[in-house]
Image (cartoon, rainbow, N blue to C red; front, side, top):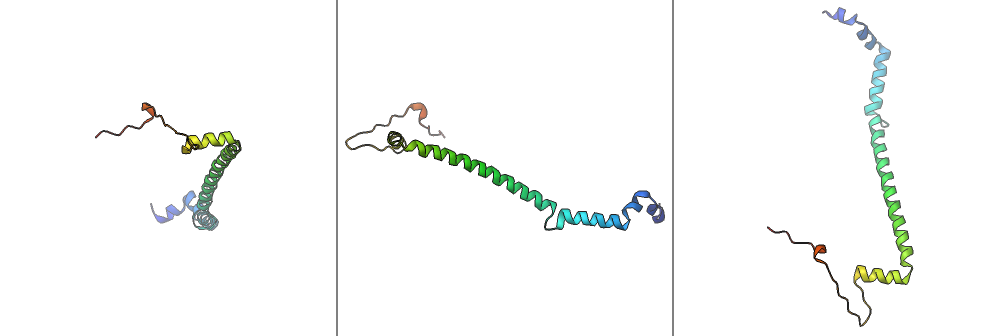
Length: 110
């Protein structure tokens, strides 16, 4: 097949049209090279989605902390928390910590 026969094909004539060539170049430029390219927009969309998920997570944490703070306003609850978490005690009081066998981590045997 010669070059002249190749140029006479319908799809080659269509693609070699100057307007189609300019359109192809424009689309390629907009997708890959422009500062507002599709690739950059998709990356920014992914960043936005990740930040929104972080915002939801931190909002849940804030709500949990608010409920904990509200619970700690009661002096009995605060004392209970301090005794359980930090093993605090009153004067002249002894505390014994009882651990069950199934709650103790066993050392790995080699």
